[in-house]
Length: 242
Image 1 (cartoon, one colour):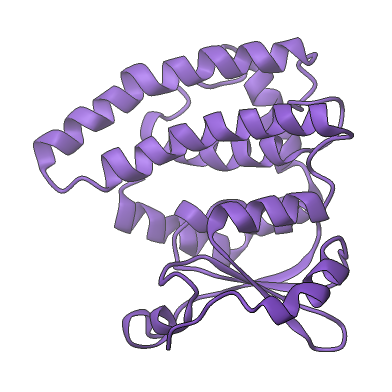
Image 2 (image 1 turned 135 degrees about the horizontal axis):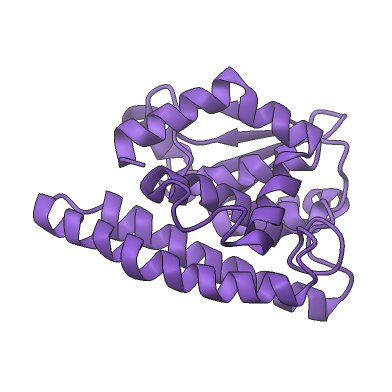
């Protein structure tokens, strides 16, 4: 079935755009990849949410999604109305605004989005240029480039920006932002490849402060300790290699 975004849902969407009491489902595979940030935002925000996994992706769910890809977000109102949002960027941006993770003003938002874009670049390199490569020699070369070039460059710039904000565990001001959560998510992937050889409390104290602060959020800590999260992490390792 070919579907498009239903314009008749405009009023429902706008009415609920900032409501935090609704419930959420994230439909994605049993890996972190493009679904990890949406899950993390919901977990860190203390939202009422759950993971949903495709049962028959090729023959069923793929045919009914808006773009033939995942993740998809389903938001249910107290009266049972459902809002659907497709594409990881749209989902993350929507949830970040809903849960007040974009700072206090447009300037804060600009900075947060810049940091997030940089973080996503590192994540994309690992997903596309390492995990996505089939040729063993090319994959090994790309993995080495990630370890020897991408991560050191990432560390240099992000440590500098976080130091400029006072090394307080946040990218912007003194409250949790989309960028803080996104950093915590990508660090899991980086650690899987490099261990703590390049990012650790001693050598990168500003980055580490964010890592500790996000992981200390009770609802987020509960999520990353859950059996479901651990199963997704194992799926990530098996399918993507990190």
